[in-house]
Length: 74
Image (cartoon, rainbow, N blue to C red; front, top):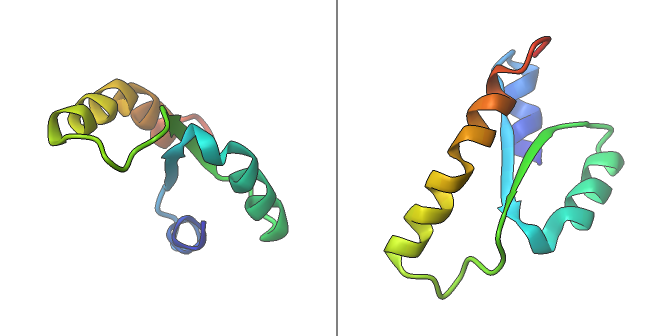
């Protein structure tokens, strides 16, 4: 969250990426920091996945990430 805030303070787009287990935690932290960052959530868990499984998660989220980075008004 802090990294996204830093990017945006320098007019660089940022998107948070986390596993679905952290939807609520991300929302609470963003609210506490006074932010409304773009977020993309992937299937939980991430640890214990093989490299191929991680690549598949990343490829599956890529469209959402690009969309969030290029959203109008950002």
